[in-house]
Image 1 (cartoon, rainbow, N blue to C red):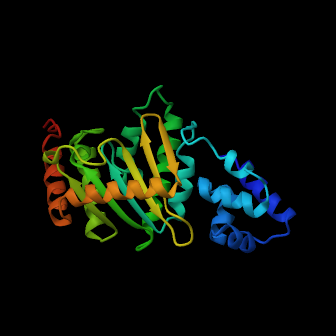
Image 2: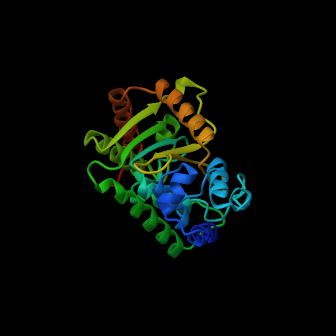
Length: 269
């Protein structure tokens, strides 16, 4: 993600002889939020940008030159990846694939190897390595707090092989049993639910506003707008209220993992 926006903001702040804290006070935002914008890790929402324009007397430059709300780029996930590393709380919803930070190596290989146009073995290996590197945020025993809301379709769809699926499901079960990840399943018989249209990640932070990331086919978007983030949080909460309790969710996951294992072809004697 280009940091021309953040660099320009920093230049205007320094020309005005303001510290980050002084600008934050004038624009009614946190100092860390200013720091994240200047380093390219966040973009302000429209309202924040307008307040920054007023504080710096930059007319409407900062609000006018925000990235287009509908814009997508080839590396659309990169802004979300940076936020994921800073988050205090991550709440995932998945309806097609297991969320990236919960994927096993073999599951990730199957998912990333199925792209179009076909990827080389070297590119697939690099992408798998990056995905597994993201999962290292779970090495910390407590932070970030992670919730995973998973549609039953994700568990039943055979990705890679029955053995790969059984291993992947049990990986999530084990994370939940260690109390590292809280997991709930949205059962098939629920039918329509508020999140059925796409994958969603909600992120909250200790020192900056919350953000959301949504993803569809070949596109994804980080959402900073407070109104939209609240709306997405509400949809997540409604879907979570329809999900199975954690104990029942883990029991169902164990059953589905066992069913995948039973479909593994028998070895010739």
